[in-house]
Length: 323
Image (cartoon, rainbow, N blue to C red; front, side, top):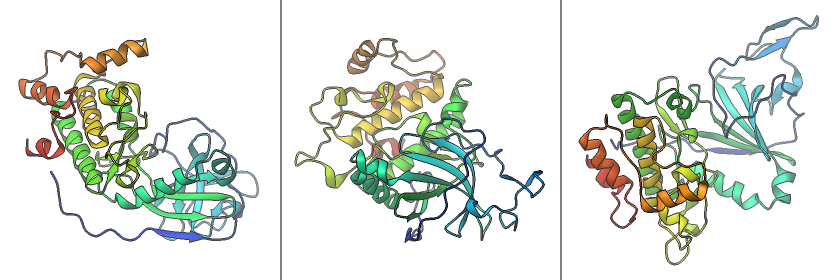
């Protein structure tokens, strides 16, 4: 599954004067980080008579305040959070669609998240891989930071699984692509720590793309014991050793999350669940789960090793890739 990758092009960081703000969206809606990237979103504009017409990336009628730094034409809002908004945009020169994450500097400074943003940029520059959402460039003004990201059209893997379990061949391919990307990250000292179907996007060719490295850790920030000590992640996908709050190997915790994802792809539901989150945590800690009857014996054996509550005996990425 692993493959030699060409040397990626450098990520360009540009600092330019403050541009006019993008126009307010006509139909804003809240989505998760990087949003539900739907390929059906279009960019429209009105002419001087108020008529709505399709917008070309090079249209001379494009509103001036829609142009970001002379390079990108901003379109609809894809999603937003407390500190950032994500817009669909087009590269004016090439016509390619991108997603631009706009971060408010004042808000992150007041919240003490400057180091967090710098770390996220550093991480995204490290992890150029076919199955990871690409960061093309970072631009900044006095008040805003702009992440120009790959626009992934197919939406979240979560949406596909929400319709029911996936065919075994499809689930196997997604799992292989996930393991390939996670192995690549670990090899560069990056640990995701929030792997789940909501953070896995699908492109228009049906390939998986890992996104949202906001909770990621890097090897340089680990303590002398080589462990992470931050309690983070999504409850249903969190590894049992994280629950002990005694420090954990982030690489092994990522493997656990991959195991939960594989179970979800094949079963259509999570292996550990309860309405009472503390009861669910107890199930995770004890490793209490049941495999559906349609799981093959090979799949059950793999899941048993992926969801091993002992991180020291849990299967490793290299071992997975040999299967």
